[in-house]
Length: 148
Image: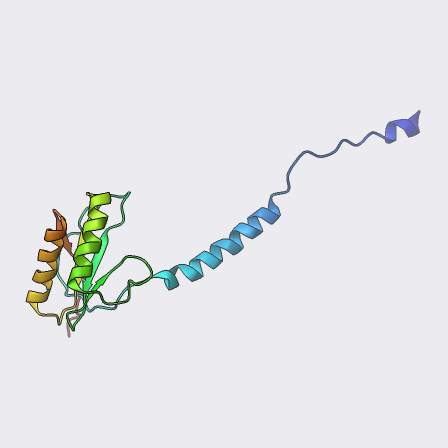
């Protein structure tokens, strides 16, 4: 009888071993942390600096970003061709189409510091023609200069 007491029936374990899942999640986290900065698309513009408070944008909508480079070319952050310059007519058509589908989409303009003021005003006029009720300007916060 003593031998039969030592041989207890083993029941199958119904617990899930989560250690491999944690390893997989950590690997995915590292991959996303490395690749996320590479996914940034756009055109390099040297933004003007200003002491301005950040605009409050709706959290559920991505804004339309229109950039004007130093040569006065227009860029729109839509699709895979966001680094390709577009004409004023293309800009007007594309922005109007987006605003018809999503009328409350925020529209922001980023102009290079060297671009003539008139080019930025022309872009803003085009955006108003396309139906953008409010247009924001993108700036950089000025860097503090060390005394001395």
